[in-house]
Image 1 (cartoon, rainbow, N blue to C red):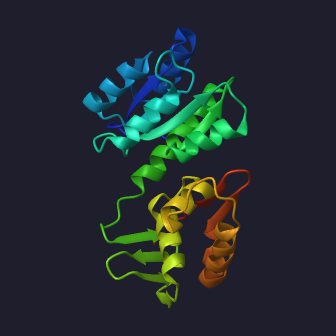
Image 2: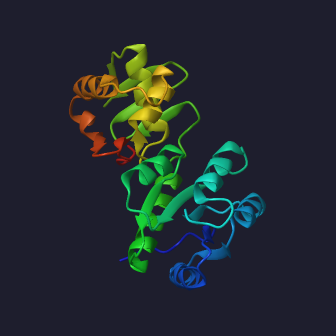
Length: 236
């Protein structure tokens, strides 16, 4: 059963195949979303800047400007950087999915897809985004609380001693909770390392972090072939 869409949730569908656009628009509108569409990357960026949709359903195989290019430009612009993105792709190759997730996509769906699954994924992404409204300096993920101003982490109100690297790793996962973070992205964000370096450093630190967080460490999920994700959990 699909939860009703919030009145403010506007969705932009970007695809150059009219049949797919019509199908997606129909099912999203039927679920209560306000839906607009674009068939090119240039139009998509213009509409995104004008309307600030809550989420963009973005096809990767667009004429001229690819979906990867559109996604990169969305994330570079402060006005559109926080718009959620669900990728649509006919490519089943893992590198393409990884590239999209590294660029900041929230999820992906491979064609052909079930319209019902797409609607459910859109709803799940929007719930995650809406759940991120904690005070600026505090992030609460289940029993884990990260105080950014004090560089302090507690689990069920018990302070956890972390190294600076472990803290930065947890903070990166917490700030993008619910989103898969590729190892290459974590290497760049936490260790300032080039993304093509092959290392087990990330895996080793994730294991140590899980151990220090005790049962709450189970919230750090391994996504095989991609990297890691901090599950949203329920805010206390």
